[in-house]
Length: 160
Image 1 (tube, rainbow, N blue to C red):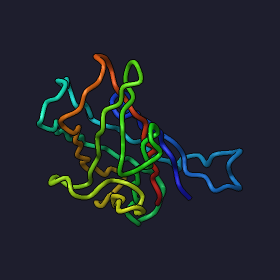
Image 2: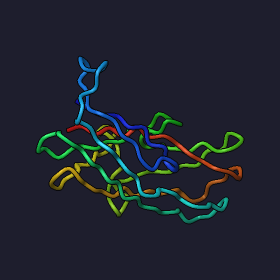
Image 3: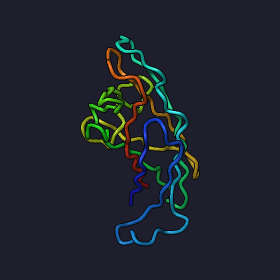
């Protein structure tokens, strides 16, 4: 059983879904599910050509009911813009794109993904229904783009 949650990099503060097996797709199980809340994940303003990367972090709050004692595994899909884990980009105005990455560790060396292509999922350890973890982001320096809002979508999957 897995639960997929679409996560828009900058704008979605909370998403929820229920665990279902393929056989149960037409009727979700009552009382079994997760809610994922993201505390602000925003790179803030970016100045064209700035040689320094912009770093950010976000606290994720995962609340799961009736999924057993195993720690949920939380994985992130590739960039919706590029279809790639290692080359994530946000779309902006006029076709502009900015490269970024999300990581599982503060030193920003382990790319958050599903365990494929040199990525790693997060094991939401802890006890009880409420688990927290932090994701770290980097908007790379030395980029140029049109002025405006940029965003990308990552599908976050929670597996019990």
